Amino acid sequence: MEKELEVKILNIDVEEVKAKLENLGARFLKSENQENIRLKSSKFDYIPKGSFLRIRKFLDKNGKEINSELTYKEHKENKFLKEFNEYNVSLKNSEEMLRILNFLGYDKLDIEKKFRTSYKLRNAYIDIDIWDKEVYPYPYMEIEVSNYDDLCEVLNLLGISEGEICLKSLPELKEELKNRS
Image (cartoon, rainbow, N blue to C red):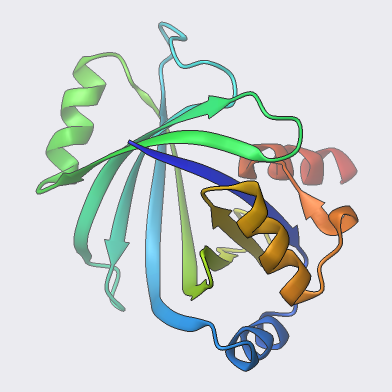
């Protein structure tokens, strides 16, 4: 289990953010294609609000699965940050795990693809996410830390004010976008 505190910065200029991170000495970690499958059930609702169960597939350039993981993100109440306890298990066969979860009643799947570029700056992991346009059309940055002081330090280095921070989940952002249309 890993404790995770995270915030989003919406509507970023991807190249500008990458340049700023590199100028600050951030270490490039990886760029990858991902397919995220959020699982729910039409029969029961055991997963508390804000928490979720997901299979994440890491894909090569041709969309072929390289590896995958099953994650349960347990939402913890926090007024200032998104806080989760994150439980991850590596999978050898994501399709078989999907079948098992379906047998257990997890029959509703939200399948979403994105391209992620990841950096490490001080004690923070910074991900730049570009979702397929039909999922969410605007790129954003996620900053993940294990404590509040690390977040404040990185926000200060990046010149990001508290007013620019977003605590909404992707489903909340998608719903907000849908309601604006």
